[in-house]
Length: 266
Image 1 (spheres, rainbow, N blue to C red):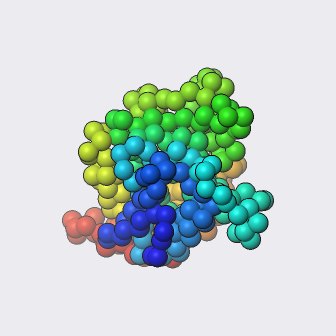
Image 2: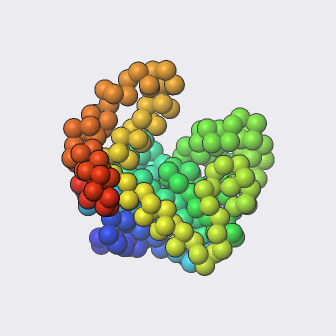
Image 3: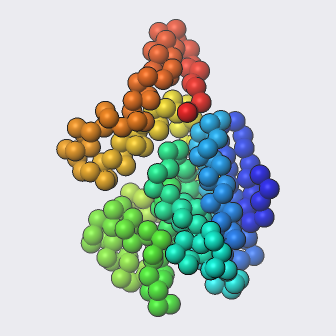
């Protein structure tokens, strides 16, 4: 992909996206947000790509959020409601609610504001020991309007969420793991190996099964426990799983004691 503000690398079924503005602590302005929106559009559309990893260049920051120094063209036709982001939100992720494929956030350094919101929008977060997380917007007269408030309440529960949101405090990687946000904390030098290990574990599963699982999770959030249980068999992703080739391949591979050869998702 021809990109200016991020680097994109593909290895096997895994796409790694590195926000590449280390001199600006990987903050994002309008053009960077639109570019990342395009990158994740292509990821979703490419059946050969099953998992993505999002990280930041350098060792200081995953992303410090919005770039307030570089002017953005809010009249750009791609801007959502006059904001310098695509319809899919900050980093092309925070409002991508229909996303089918897993994304892992590999958080190096601090993830603040929109950077934290982008990490929260991912399915799995792994973090370097030096990482920290926060939504400091109230300290500059703003609020976290990229989904951060809602996701913090969803992830932490109301009391912990209020304690963090109303003080604009940062939390460490260790505390984020203790509160259940971060799946694994590793030495800084091991972060990308850790993220790749998680990506490979996901890619070892049937992509049709992963897509169906994500659809059921979304249905649970949208409909609640009982309705999502009763309605999940009508989901197109679940029907595709049952009618696709992987359901047969999985049983055959198990019987033959070999690794399954999964099909690309449709």
